[in-house]
Length: 215
Length: 303
Image (cartoon, each protein chain N blue to C red):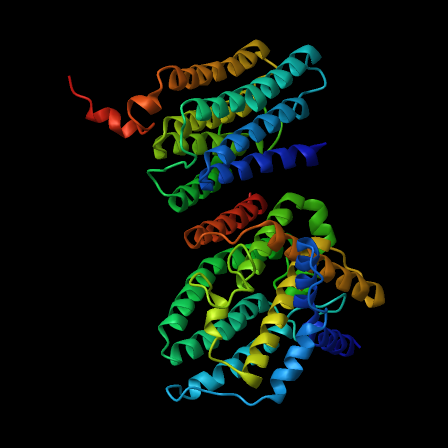
């Protein structure tokens, strides 16, 4: 059982690296979907025996449905609908972002032990994996030029928060489940991209061009 | 006794080395629906090349002629440090993994010098690329080996890949898995296999390793080809031993080792069949990715 939990956490961090290094939007979208599957599995794996089974299953199925299927489908649809080119188009190159990601992960693993937690952690890899994923999401949000890629960064950040939330799922199950709803915010972003055709207005999804707007 | 088995295994490895590229080529041919060259093609090639005379350009010096010999000698010396089968290596000592890495680097240095000595711009370009990529592969190799060393608490290749490995696998599965993956990527890069370099092209601007040996002919080329096959075997046995992770000795160990080498060749062949060569600017990304991965494996062990 712990071996599987280990594996899920490790795969989560490895998928973070993949997200930072990948240059294709489709591959990045698939990787976020894979993270959703991992989170759903983690919700089941980390559940304590005394936890309410309905909450655990709700959390897991919610994560699977929203993070692994709904959002990736929406993103693919947005890509097609707004005819977004398939490259990620980073501001910070892939190599520097990968190295930065690696540094962040190393720091997360080195210092996660010193973090005072309100509840005893269920698994030694939980906090570092959550922090690494949050860091990756943050990097993706600030270092990508395309709005879709930034939405994906927000999703990854959200995934990290979700993992952290699993720590508290016994005390405030409803809160953590509501956390899944944060993804709906990302869904709203995607809708915005499609509905307002950001791609068409600015002929690209480059948010840098927004600063050129004048009255 | 251990020395005798080590010598036997080393001899076996030296004899079987040219079979490995043949095996990879056979897998590629099967995947492409061709019959492919016979498995022993490289033996015939070597025999043919050794009977020929060699032609050297008048602009070259002794550096060019020494290149293949030094390269093969360094690779052979590295082969004495790698444990084959269940046996230990011929000359194992603490920290020999550093010597192993730098003997292979010496072999590369000799090849690069020989390529630069011809004065051909084409070979110079290939040499520059080879050095760039191998300098990026080096951290991945060291971090991967360090992860295995840390997990097994041994500092020699024979100790790392020896009796301590099964226990390490039981305790640190994820870290070793990551290290094995990184070492496999390094093996592909170091041996000029497909995601990094295409071993079948000879006259393309993207090629790296093959371009450096264009001016060698006859016995010199035979030495280079044999050295390349041996290097593939060395990395193959390294990766295969880490992945298989048993400490069987004797005949069973040897059989398992040969089987795992065949498995390595098949995996390399499949990778070459299903992947295209990466764009040149993407190669550093792959290698740095491998370094970051193996650093992550190390971090997992150290915490």
